[in-house]
Length: 205
Length: 96
Image 1: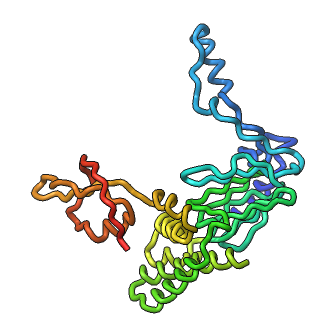
Image 2: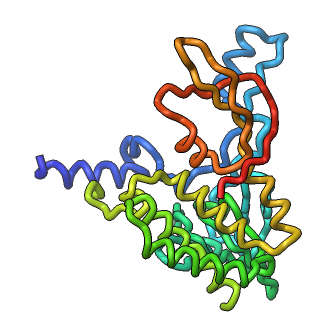
Image 3: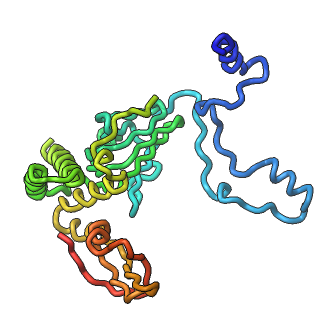
């Protein structure tokens, strides 16, 4: 079985220029998404030439931008919350997201990534302006066409954080952790400590 | 490959991601400065009605509580509880 593996791998990878080609193209080489299905429209026109083909939801949406062949100059950021969209298609230079694996900087041409966010500071750098938001948790998706989607449940500008409340919360959750008995209580107390220490770092740092 | 990956502490304690995310969000909202805090408090509200079923008939529903959904379900519901009901009264119920 493994004797054939190398031959099969070579077939798949070199299938582009010669031979049948790989079964599916890699997602890095995708063109822009089509607004309507060309084969469906042709088939419809053959059957009912006088009636307009039905529109699908995809034709009302803006198509996915194509993956450019060279690294674009700016990053397009969409930062959305459940109740409002903070940034929509904003062109920026860099975004630093608080991923669970640490602060991650995203520049144009970043490798496509899905990152889970931890409570922390998200900073959007555009030229010399920096906009900082404290994000409670969420996800960041970086696509091959340098579009970054950041979704969070709650995000507040860092200057709207009240330091006194943060200290109070930190003390309260530390106390709850020491008096916690069940796993769930300990987890909730630990979450409280994580969030409040991140808030503390955001306010003072 | 990743079947033995380390789970986050909240999942090990039996909490789901949505619960974790909502707890984080409500903690962040509670640390806001004053005018924003009042606006944000309205975002935490959940409108629902809970009615207990007895002998196959629903009793009058407990009215729409406005916060801390998961705590209310833990406190009020036993196994014969059923979410439903048509009354739309609003009662301010803070569960801290």
